[in-house]
Image (cartoon, rainbow, N blue to C red; front, side, top):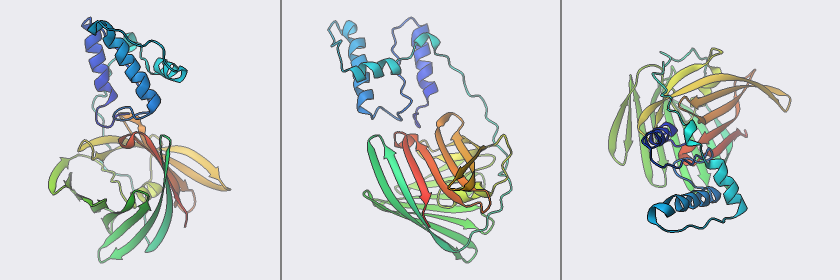
Length: 298
């Protein structure tokens, strides 16, 4: 689930080597992101590297290994004869976002956030402030955790169009300016522009509220979403995904995922009556597949 180098890139290399008559070993971990972070995956990878290089270098390798590493290695191993390259092709982006019935109100909301990253569990507290300032809505998330304090500010016009986002964390500042068919990101004092055509789904404080009131078709929509790691637009599919009863309350479930990588996804639970959001669960390949659960507490 690599956000920088897609699995399809690895597939193409394997196919080229295989079809060229070269030896190639392919390990694929569905629980990793840009590199192996989990110890058992790392040990399995190094065991395979050692086995692969031994005859090439004229050396030897250690064949025995812990049972869990040996078992994981077999799970990771891909039969190279089965590898195929199926290019995604051109994705048709929805021309514009469906109608939504969002009405912000001046208020404060509290959230608890839990980030599960491997064996780590990182709790956070977030306070969201919604303020009307002249002809804009300013929505601010103030976060506190063991990693320190941070703030994330989104500015919308009164029609719900994103104008600007500003993120401050650990002394770093990132701003995102939204224009017609263009997004400009400023990091470390440098501007970088990304162009797009069709509907754009922004991320940041308040963005999920739009999804909660959006009139989504049954087969969903495909929208642009900015991937800051690659500074490109990625196609995201947003689709209704059934409903669930929690503590006697019925919630609609909305799923959004990267068209090219369905493991890069966010699921939100929306109250059927009030259209308020109870919680969201995000799987983030950019954070080595961390699971981020955000639950409203007040």
